[in-house]
Image (cartoon, rainbow, N blue to C red):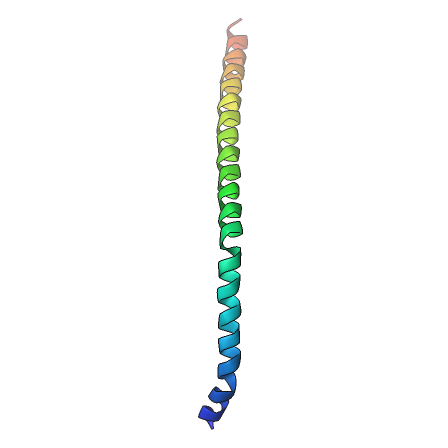
Length: 73
């Protein structure tokens, strides 16, 4: 009984496999391009965030020094 059902499923499995292979071949280049572009955007965003964090830390330290200087006056 199971063999009869398996025999019925084989053509669908083959068709599905063919569709998956065709999609993989067709979408390989656009997918690689998309992933590369996303990687570059993430890298740029990380660098921008690092610069902004450094600037904020510098301003915070200057503010701390200014507040500390107020108590000495």
